[in-house]
Amino acid sequence: MIDHKDPEVQHLLKTIQIVWSQIGSDILSACEEYDHYVDNEEAIECCIDADRLLIHGNQEAQDTFNSLTQTHGRSQVWEFLNKELYLN
Picture (cartoon, rainbow, N blue to C red):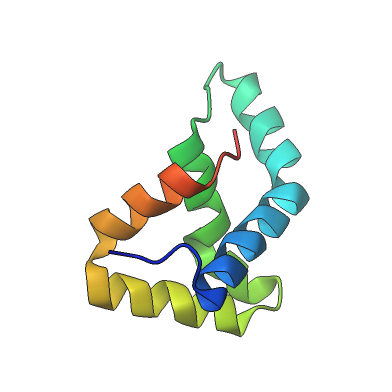
């Protein structure tokens, strides 16, 4: 089980929120043009995909995501993130 109180996990969650605040409106606008609704899981994926955690200067958050994925498996990490974060 992923500990949502762990400081590294909290840092990852905060970083994903920061990335979304920087890219979210552009993502939503682009998808709206094609009548596509971006659900929460897609929003989270947009923040993690294409090394966006690294691009936004956060190696520690990327390392935490990688470690969680190795330890718990990708599906459990995505389920956790989707439960802990509400981006859209």
